[in-house]
Image (cartoon, rainbow, N blue to C red; front, side, top):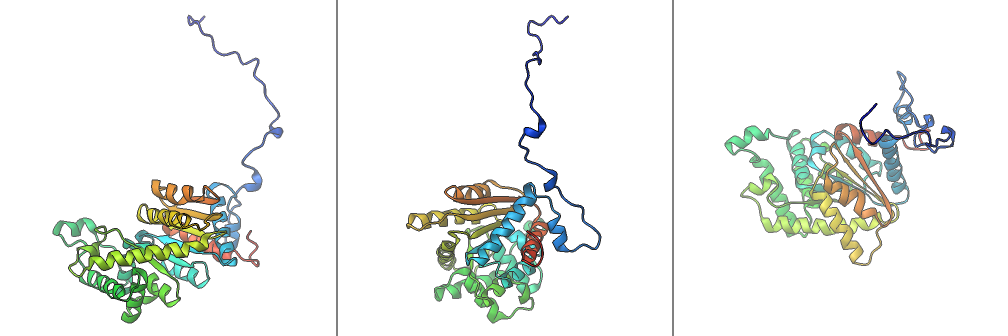
Length: 322
């Protein structure tokens, strides 16, 4: 006999109900179907479970395709890691399919894209280079980017358009891999949003800070103009920028609404291997509180973005994917 005053709770009065009467969030109808050897991409995508992340991926793919059909903006915000994981060819293909209407980049993305265009390679060993003070000091990178920004500044261009024009004139060996150049050739706007002091080219003596500031602010205003077309069915995707682009995006949202323009009923998404605070708040949650849908997809860029792209390519009436 226990010496405690309180006895274990008596379960005899507990009420139960039939399982069939309960609403459940998971059904076998939503389960994944195994992939069969020799099956194609359409079959693989169609076999994914209609649950959680796979459901959100499907929802985002439909939102992008619907935005294209309805002539709404499809804006991809991308950080440098997207370039470093080799995804430029995938994004260029989506440009050609009308699934990217504009690109927003941070400074890191611009630098890696520029180096890819010039040399076909990028991403130095920071730890090793930092010890000798050589980190970020490649001559062609700093001189070329700062020259392009300076020349664009003189012609009232933003940084994105300045770099695209410069690369077109330069005709670099690996131009087919450059988002900046390929977007420029297709008349797809690219905006670049710079944090002064955060990028390696700001260390170079060739920099004209006034040009960087003015060019980035022009691109900020250009992005706000592009975002007007998100209203009523557009899509904004933030891929790999944890701070800069989410902050810029949120400021553009308030700029438009402050000016009396309606911005609601659109889709936002954050695709990253870690769901950081700013993308979740400034992209996924806050902008769509008055109408719209925010989606968070967690995964490696080199897997998640090609998977989304494959779904976008396959999502057409003759594939059978719904």
